[in-house]
Image 1: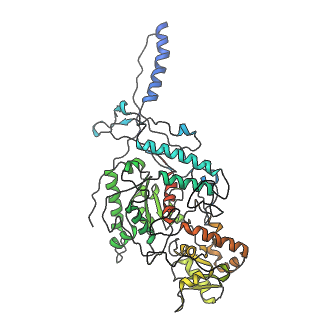
Image 2 (image 1 turned 30 degrees about the horizontal axis):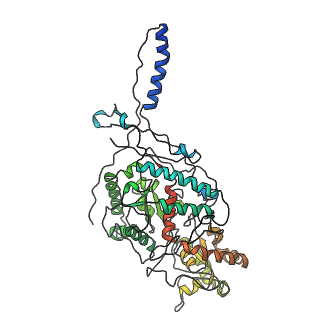
Image 3 (image 1 turned 60 degrees about the vertical axis):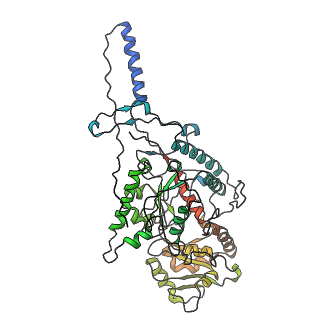
Length: 529
């Protein structure tokens, strides 16, 4: 692999106040007038033209995603149900938040920004470049932010409509039903994304670690998304000034495969590669430093995605991390990070995985098969494997001649316990087989939770309730089960991997998750001296 040279990042200039010494006056009737009027005028001019940093206002969050250790379901207020709260995601100097309760014209008002000459020979006495103090009205960034302000307003208006069916026209699909938190707001947001969203993929870096990923494995979500962006058929732009977000095209799976030293458990090479890559793009382009990485995103379906991002603090704390390992106890922040569905495609295709018998032909109450992999599976296997219960069938290894897919498709509920990390490909497997997923995990944020109401089509069982699984599932009435199973069939379209992406499928839903998080920030433009 070719090593990337480090390029030093230019630190943001600090605040400085211009010195001002008022002139002296003799007291006379005329001078008294000068004494009263002139200082007021000077003070006004200094206050107006003097160097200053923009204030940082809290965003009335587009996404509220509260969670607790005892509840896996994201719930409460959000842009999709018509209310909002202040986001806890805090940026620094170069960025500030769009204030959602500010009148629209005021929200996109021209910002006054002063350039400071911070050369080494004159750090204590910055020179004010008054001629360039105002950011150009028609800069691409200003136009982008003005357009996003309009989009935020339109989504919030759509969120006020509480109908179960979207009121917007669509030739392909109109979101409807309780699987959505707010069908009208989601539809409005999705349609706006199709018109506005632009992604710039950095060209730096060489395969196989960059611009590449696995497409036929348990990590296929990672590879398929990278390859679709590399094709450039959807959302991408070749002009970085047009982009709303910037993709860091490294594959954590490939980093681990080529750079991890298992004999000594050394991940330093992985960390150095990510640090070097950020240094290169931050030195070559203005976009990372402008936002401190807040409008950049990485994605990973490998368990080590969070660890890999931790080598660059701004990547971990400010960038959009699209992770299968969406574990809030390991720093996953749902207001800026997006949960990535883990999809196991051994052949690279979904052919034969979709569909199943009608509910009346599903004879198994609940099913799981999988080897020991983390403490939750240990509890599940220890409790149910030896019981040989015909209703709750739990295996560490299926008997010879028994088809895994057949078991899935003949089960009413499919158990989806976490492994060593929170994500499990069994969730999407269950949805594909039209089997109601039973999520058993701690601190896991389900994919697309800001849009989808998981409680409407899945069951969530606390780890402590593993011994009570049968009782819990038997307590679901036939009527309730039939509703949930129909909703699983409906939500399936949002998780399907298509050879060529189709509207509302998993590729577009992942982009929508990134799009929503970009709506949560407002980037300011600072010209460099």
